[in-house]
Length: 124
Image 1 (cartoon, one colour):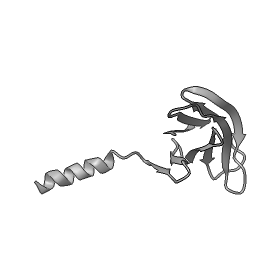
Image 2: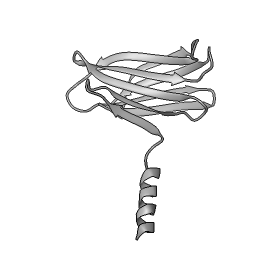
Image 3: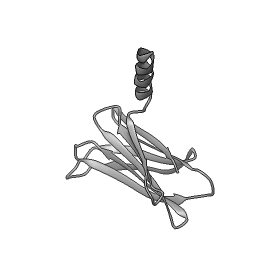
Image 4: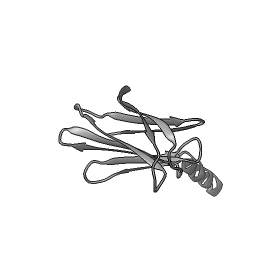
């Protein structure tokens, strides 16, 4: 019986995605993870004066690399832009205040560059 319980516990740990999620007292939801290459990403959203404040960060640790970034709310593109990573950290950030209709919203973000993709989502 111990082996079955241990195996079950191990399988439960393996089922957890390689990203972190958090929600604090002001309603902010944060999710982060790894990109397909060496970079990592962080997606944040929180209610703010009847709107949603959304921020997507990509950290590549290299300066002056161009990325194409898209932010979506409930499947509809709300931002499509190009950004370059900047010193000193070699990262980029896209921030946008978007509509916050009643109910739960799914926010998704994608950043791509030659040979690498960063993709994250959250619900708020």
